[in-house]
Length: 366
Image (tube, rainbow, N blue to C red):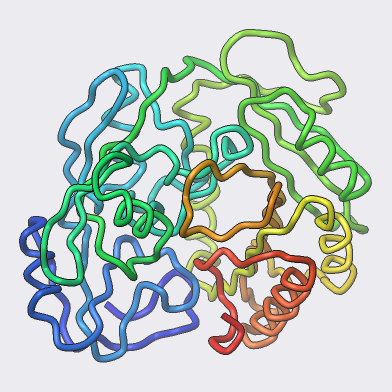
């Protein structure tokens, strides 16, 4: 089990364990001699879910959905968001924030933060945790929540596994809409897109920058349920909520067929203070060509609020710029893309920005 989605770092663990219970995770930590790294679906991009000579915990064996009630669902940390949604949608419920790609684990995204198109209103996925079971570095299984062991609760959400391994989570649920309407809106500048991200009345919003042939900006604004449409939309599509939540599946299947899903993915992702975001975005894109992104690369731009995850460092009024690069044939190589990510991170830090640590940057830049 070496490698991850990034396809850049590949190291070999000394041992791979597949725990079947929280107690087995705790025992692995208690008996460890060296690094112990949890791994879900390994969707990190620069070795974050790997260990060189340490113990790798394959968490996918802990994937049960235990209980669904109107306001919460309790799941094992190795369950994917697809598995969570398959359990909650029959009850008409959904988590408030979902990742764009559902085949990543609950424990993994809660340990990173978990950003989605609903984050402009509802924060990150880690904002909607009601309680956690955590295996601590001392080998104990501890329950924590906002009212119980708050120090541990705040340390592990967004803490990248440094303070314990999440083994089970109780997550907030909200009513799921039956249908949604997806609107496409077009803008000429980054500033206009950022303004639209703030003011367009939609439940789920996400911006993209596209090279066609110059850089242009597109906003996907999704309204849940009935209500007025969004003025100025170039395109409107209505679909069931479940299909919308799983909208990436056809694209992923096509990328797998083309071999692009298996290419290296040196992703650069930063959080920028909103007042500097347009300048950083435009400066970054000015030095970016199609070869710097790759055939299936995507540039995402979104706003988010972080309501209460102290371990996730973000600037005030954050904007996320995600350069989701793919080292396709004929594109820039992984080393050149890593160097571009380093420059992006330097530019972000110069204006008070931070990195989203599932990204791919040289070790010395972290």
